[in-house]
Image (cartoon, rainbow, N blue to C red):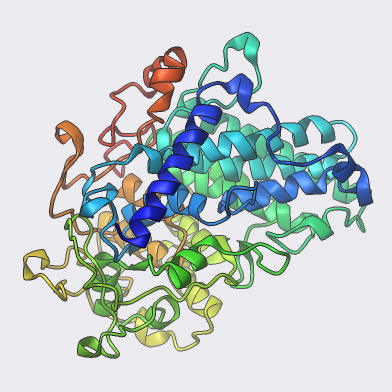
Length: 531
């Protein structure tokens, strides 16, 4: 057995242990497993800051709870959302070549987002809410924003989740439908903006949280901008599921006097300057398990996009020296011939980006396209591209904005049976005469490029809109053909151990889902239409 194979068996075994102890009984989840002692919380006024530090590290999961720091992220995000979004693929033949890539979904991988969030992060959120609600309004407001940022990623994986009744045995830890969860998200953001606004007004020089802030600059005004920008993201997500609510929430954020992210320097990212290490960097640089996907190759190369050199390294295979080449999902390869293709440039010291100002400009472009605002969709679109380029130190923009280039066909470096014609047929150039569907495709395709490598958000938006047009899997090994090859995977299954350990709660989750518990069932906001 290879060294990689042995490591995966160990990882899977640990995942199963976590599933048994952490995912099946919510009364057990309420036990604090973080390793924090009462003395830790009393020292240096850390009682609230330590908890918020754990939560911040737990979004792009790399909180060290004593069991290792990088493999949880691989299970939580890299082997599902990062791949399903069309961003990345592993060059190693994990599980003999058949696994999530070809929709042979691995429960130990796909339950990680659920088990790690509920066992280690949500309890800290709950404790932080309780301990700051009445006496520490600034910390309470930030807790609310972090709560939404953490948990919207979870519901966007699975659909229904335990949210409003977490830590509530009297109500049997009753799950919420995704519609209910999103409704609560907006209320949480209302609370956060209100309490932070009042705190700034009363204490304009306050900086209590600054030393604990590893996402922004320590200023409460920046956190309100984050809350407003996050509200925009969630409003756009429900654009077809609840159009009027979506429009109302979006405009509430746009009109808020504290503002939203607009400049290229306004980025929400988990900083590596205070002890956090980017787990994707470890997977990429040390394990050699994150490479360019075929869809990314097709679009970046077809556009001659200058961000290509920022995101990826050129091939080390001398046959393709200087080229950027990727791997197609769902090919079931059982070899290591792709190991010299294009790896990511992300390292352990790269900040883990969660939201950018470029994303917000694309949200504004879509809102304008939908008629929610009086802004010009084309102007917002071009601002999104420009902001993304500037974020990465690229200042030559005019040629790209006027480019009529389209994606290139994919030619596999090893197996010509994997070759496929380009699916994405839109160019970067904004053409006012295009119909709104083409315009939407351009907006989402460019947003997809701009928010790399944040696979959770990219996968959610690709499912919602169908854009960018990704390559389908060549082999579809989903159970009972539950996932349509062209429609692609829509969600992750609930953790399998719930069936054995807490069938009642599992049944409640499936009922709230309103469909079969498999990867082909659409989420509430995934309506299958764009208008």
